[in-house]
Length: 291
Image 1: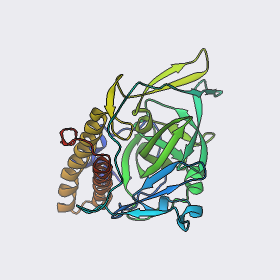
Image 2: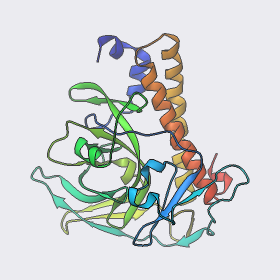
Image 3: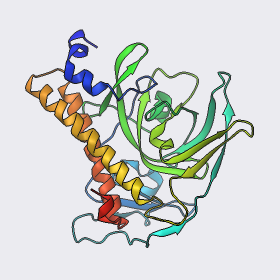
């Protein structure tokens, strides 16, 4: 990265607070498509996505692939009433690495298996180039990139949205992730864009990680999430998009060489916000949680 880029005060203000304790990487977030798709896999699990490229090839031509409209007044996925439930605990086997850190086995997008290091210091999930290749990632000029501070200095981390990430029976959908072509020996880091959906307890004596959903006993849920989860996630995406938008505007006015990169990142977080609002509408999340 040039000294001109690193000395720009707007760019550095964006980079601060976005530090990931990892290195840079590789994956694409395509624009959110109008409408959404659903399909049912061989185990009977139903999947949803706004991006048709996330649909496994074997399900793209099957009769159970459905396209749903999202326009106002169009039919939507029937929503179940809010469920009041307890807080199930998902126990996951920990694998101790030679470094003393712990690894867990995960499944990405219902098809790619990986072994990730548990890292609560990583803001997002980071995956290796090899995992990116297995997911079919290709990078181009529209790929959003996150400014990241590493031991070697400032780098740009290509970003994507993982359609689903499952650790044992615990699953999160539409997970922020970046890709790192310098990562060696492990498939990546399991960061807070997944772990933040749970209360995490590391039981090293029994060799287990316990993941509890962010709910209170008897609390109403929409798509398995309490109202405060929806509110906090929407606020997070809104604040990030607004913060970066301000910097992007100034950089475009001064013809800064990194302006396009920052604009792509604005669109990335605006896409995450748009997708979350679509999910919320489908699940009939009360409007008080969406402001």
